[in-house]
Length: 317
Ligand code: ACO
Image 1 (cartoon, rainbow, N blue to C red):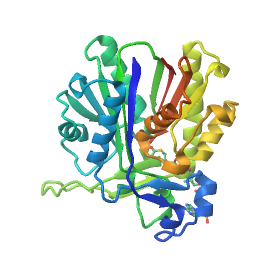
Image 2 (cartoon, helix red, strand yellow; image 1 turned 120 degrees about the horizontal axis):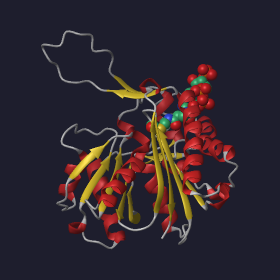
Image 3 (cartoon, rainbow, N blue to C red; image 1 turned 90 degrees about the horizontal axis):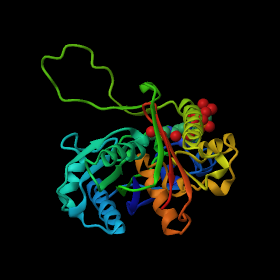
Image 4 (cartoon, protein in one colour; image 1 turned 45 degrees about the vertical axis):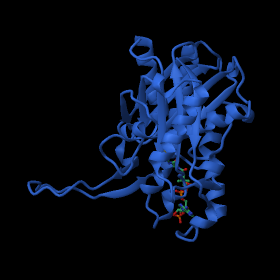
């Protein structure tokens, strides 16, 4: 399986830390020093559906195929205003695709999860060209009256087209059921027959320190495992494209693996954590800047709510 095109659509509005400090008790100094994030894009006037459609069209154009050649659409999304139908189904209608579509939710590990599924479909011969869309609007699940989580996230859509061929080497997904460290619990409709206590509905709740520790240990272990399973040495890898949650997490993973700074690119300072959209956004930037060369050995790694994590080795063709 190989990646043949990527696309990104970002909201217009740039929200700096100072802008957030007008609503919650925080500061640019605190956010920048604790997370590396200086600004993020937030959806104000656009719709997530339109951003997803734009990223998808750009990825298909970059792949040099027609929308009619897309055999399957997998959309990764944590939450949006439609619970049903799936976001992928809605986006399909905006991009004139006709293939089957469905959503997956594996939080920030969503892109690599979709890549793993796509690889299975392609390897089995079921589908050839698969469009993966990662459309995320975390700004609508965080609590904007509390400073803990709203500073971390940004909204975005990104997409990638994958097809048969050489590229993906190994991919590994892991899940450890720890819902309490990071969750968003939304309200369901009134039902006159429900008598049990339904618990509390909450905007995104996060044990930041626990997530930090788990993110670093999971990512370091996943990367070591996929690199070893591929038969590579860590020093053979040219680029580590990591989930963009926090610059301190990225730095800590880099230090644990003893990697040089130039092999671990980041854009979290400009985008914040865009959940599953992060990796294709960074990949799209690196491709546009000519920083990924033919034959490059690449490692992808992501982690998020679940607690779920994923890593992959990939040779750029
Ligand atoms: N502004 C100012 N002060 C703050 C803020 C803020 N935005 N947030 C917390 N503080 C305060 C706390 O209240 C605390 O104050 P106290 O000492 O008086 O109690 C102090 O700063 C230190 O808080 P900590 O939580 O210990 O700060 P820490 O250095 O751990 O940084 C952070 C917090 C940035 C959340 C960090 O733990 C982190 O990045 N964790 C990972 C979070 C993450 O990546 N989540 C997304 C995962 S991916 C996904 O699937 C969604």
